[in-house]
Length: 335
Ligand SMILES: [Zn+2]
Image (cartoon, rainbow, N blue to C red):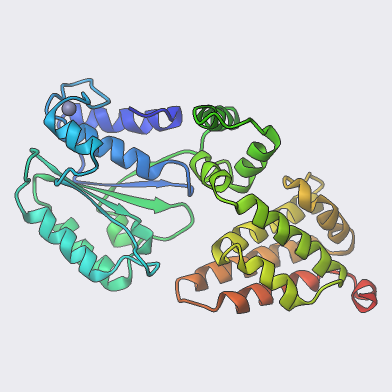
């Protein structure tokens, strides 16, 4: 069912609970962005509704009526609730979930509601979901997904069985990514693949997403603008413009990776992003380590502000200015 071997331990854990009749009413699958949480939830949902499921089975039969509906992405008893245009899941979506949870299944013996993601519920939506979690219907299974580092209300978390999904080992991730690209007959570019995996924090699906988009090209442009900005060759506005093409979330991810590289180099280690090595080595010679951590904190503040519809331009400007503040004064006035 899944070609992602790193999902197997969690799938097995879930399957065993299912076989022993102690399936949790609600599970919270946690893991890094792009590690395969949604795919895992879909695998679990498909297994749950399969008509021919027997103990020990970890993937659905693929042939029964339920499985055909799943394959056609039209199974009426599997619903996904995810943020739409806004970045948050709204209360009316959770109300729809609550109604789905108490209604009878249409074609399967069970219903599955996937909340992708439970860390993006606004407070009203979270409270509404809590009611469904507190009064569980017997024929519904809730699969909540949480991205690492994004908080979920403790009251929600405590009503779920938490299933942490580990980021795969580097070889596993590289192997999966290479196989995925080979299956599309794309010419292998191992350097690009390695860079995408690095930028994705080792999460293979996210790396694939980056390779599928023109993200790496936009990232190269942002990196070049960043270098020029640090040298004083271009203005903050000009630098911020190239970051705008990346979007704020990707900008923050990139800057956080660079700030972490800076901290690593300051601690005597190596930078992971080859494109930033020169800049961080230079900054490391003229700044105390706490400056790198201060930068990481500022980036995390921006990330927290992200949910409040902050101005991406202002956040990017603010962070660029903070980076520039790490340049020795002599260089700054020369630029
Ligand atoms: Zn089946």
